[in-house]
Image (cartoon, rainbow, N blue to C red; front, side):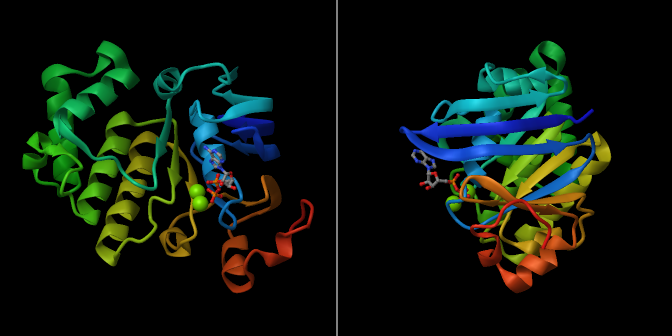
Length: 251
Ligand code: ADP
Ligand code: MG
Ligand code: MG
C-alpha cells in the first residue's frame, strides 16, 4: 500500500476553489515530481497535505501511512512523519538556531531525541553538510546567505528524518553551489532514511541526477498528466500549454 494516498482532493481558500479533485499516490522510498504552471495549485496541495489552516479541504481524503490525517493538526502530521519545506525560509530574530531545531525535534520525536543526544546528532549533521557549528548560536535565518539557508533546510530535513518530505521550489533561484547543497541533502535523506519525496519544481536541473519514479503535472487545480521520468525533458521542450484543457493522458 502507498505511504501517501491523496484521493479526489478538493480545497478552497477564501471561498475560492483551488483544487478540483486531485488524486496522487506515493510509495515508500519513491521520488515523485509535481510540475505545472504558476498558480496551478501545487503549493496549495503541499500545504493542505501538511494541514495549513488557511486552506479548507472541501472533498476527498488524505491517507498517510494507512490512516486518514485530514483532521489532524500540522503538529500531529509532523509527528506522523510529514515534512514541508518552504519557498522562502523563515527568519526569526531573537531565536537561536539551536532552540529552533530543539523545538522542531521535540515536535517530531517528543522525548525521543533531546539533550546531549540531540546536540550530538545536530553537530554530526553540521559536519556532514559542511556547516560551521557556530551557526547553531546565531539567530534563525537572520543574515544567512542563500547557500546557508539551504544548508539549514537540509539540516532540518536530515534531523527530522520524515517519512515523506515535500520540497516546494526549494531549488528556485539558487546558484550552482546552493543547488549542490540541496542535491547532496536530498541524496543523504534518501540513503539514510529511505524517505519518500514529493519535489515541486520548475527547475529540471535538480532532477538530472535523481532517480524519479513518477511525474505529475498539475494545471488549474487538476492533475492534467502523469508519467515516468521521460515526461521531464518532454516538458522542458514543450512547456505546459498542451496540457491546458486536456484531460488525464500521457503525451
Ligand atoms: P502554484 O504553487 O502552483 O503556483 P498556488 O497553490 O500557490 O499555485 O496557488 C493556486 C491558486 O490559488 C492561485 O490562484 C493563488 O492565487 C490561489 N491561492 C493560493 N493560496 C491562497 C490563499 N491562501 N488565499 C487565497 N487564494 C490563494
Ligand atoms: Mg506560485
Ligand atoms: Mg507554488
